[in-house]
Every structure is written in structure tokens, then in C-alpha cells.
Image 1 (cartoon, rainbow, N blue to C red):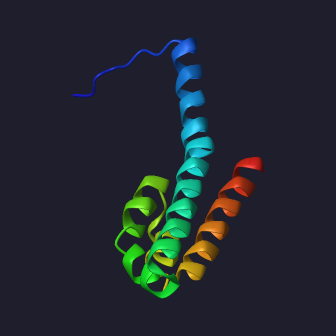
Image 2 (cartoon, rainbow, N blue to C red):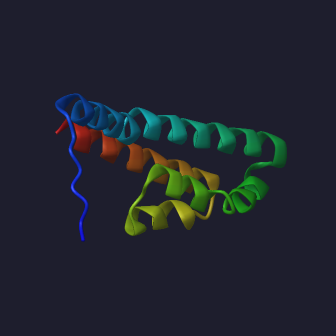
Image 3 (tube, rainbow, N blue to C red):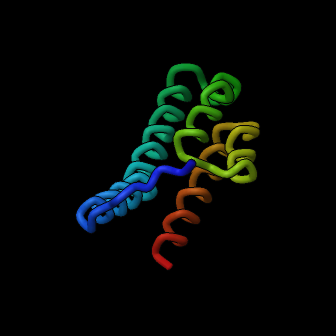
Length: 101
């Protein structure tokens, strides 16, 4: 049996605002954090070693960004930090363009 949920206009507006925040501002914050992590890892470990080390973290960031399976694949399988940055830039610019449309 399905339970009926009654939602006021104010509740609906709050939900829409939260969804908008999570799909834009929060997503950008997570992407910026990943860029910062990549920069720090390269500085501390060197570019080649950082690329190998960060592969362990990309799945968590992909989940947090809410990426589809196909979009997630480009980030998770990035062979270098440069490729990861390119994938991240493409994903965030595509999301921004999609929201603006």
C-alpha cells in the first residue's frame, strides 16, 4: 500500500531549492575540492606517482558528484592527473551548460 504524502507549496519550493543547490553549487564545490586534491598530491608525490595514488579516490568523488556510469568511467579510468583534470573539466562544463539551457 502506498502512503500519501502531502506537500505544501513552501515545502515544494524548499525541495526545489535544495535540488538546485545540490546539482550546481555543491557539485562545483566537490569538483573544486578534487582539483585541490590533485594539485596537492602532485606537489607532494610527483605527477606520475600522484596519478597512480589518486585512482583510489576517483570513485568516491564520482559518486559524490552523482555521475552516471558512462560519465564516471572517464574520471575513474583516467591514466594521469592531466586526464583526470580534463575529464573533470568536461563533466563540470557539461553540467553547467545543461543547467543553463
